[in-house]
Every structure is written in structure tokens, then in C-alpha cells.
Length: 54
Image (cartoon, rainbow, N blue to C red; front, side, top):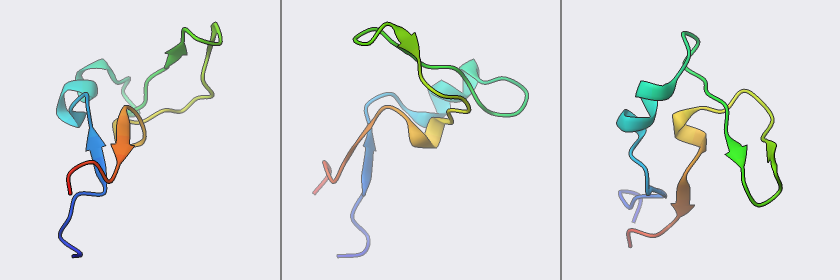
């Protein structure tokens, strides 16, 4: 059971890396709340749902 995917990224991490700054972070704008999320945001910590690939 340990080989199951824990985070299912609906935008692939390798695609998000193309939007990163030199320090491998990027800004995320939240349209629902009309503001930017706190920096730094990384590809591994965004755009995923937990335990979707079971």
C-alpha cells in the first residue's frame, strides 16, 4: 500500500517548473478571493488533490 500515489497533480509538476523564478518558486493568484497566495509557492505544493490515484 505504500506505493500508491499520495498527491495527484492535475497540472503536472514538470509543466509548472516552466513558470518558476530562478529560486524555483512562483506566485499563485486566487481568483475566488481576489488576491495572491503567500509566497513562496512551489510546483510540489500546488495544484493537486490527495489520494486520487487509488
